[in-house]
Amino acid sequence: MVIAIISILAALLLPALSLSKASAQSIACTGNLRQIRLALGLYLADSDSWMPPRDAPTNRWPAQLQPRYSAVKLLCCPSDPSANAAMTISNATPDTAPRSYLMNGFQDAILQMLGGVLPPDGTALPKVRESIIARPADTILFGEKASASTNFYVVLAVNATQYLPDLEESRHGGTLGLLNKSGHSNYAFDDGGVRAIRWGEDTCPLNLWAVTEAGRRQFGVCRPH
Image (cartoon, rainbow, N blue to C red; front, side, top):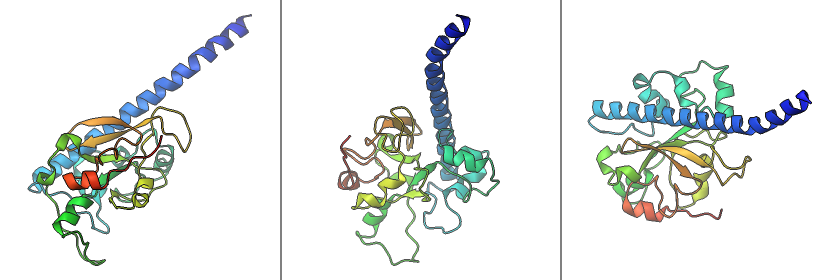
């Protein structure tokens, strides 16, 4: 009888414990993004508000910001099993360390600066200033990365399949599985806030990765749930 009661209690408690652990991981992930956003703020203060250049081949945003955040472990969301498994066996430099986050590539602003045509491969992209962001509270600077993606930046394209697979939009909450569309992910915004957004709402009806008003509409992508 005692064993039966213990089994029943365990069955009742395990889901609650699992939810509590998942909630704690999401909070820790939010804290990581907040510190990364703070590191960017310090970088901007030191660089006259110029954003880190995107096309540096061996010095990407994790390395450019690293002097302003504590340790590369900060680049891993606790809910990202792939990144955390790799981190336990890696002592890599920032650009090669396991990573759970992407930075905004400011593609729509760069296209606007260049008249809609990107330069040939190998040509440096123009740098952008934080002042190009007209809606700081509605513009994502960092978000969660799909575990399988190796990209560092969200590079918007008319063909959204070129960048949507890089986004992890439902890492926390909801149902489990690769096609989870009922959860949320965490995002750091230009105003310094970090917020959870449900699957698909970072790109619909306006694309919050876009900086210009035209880009927010042009690159808006709404997908069925």
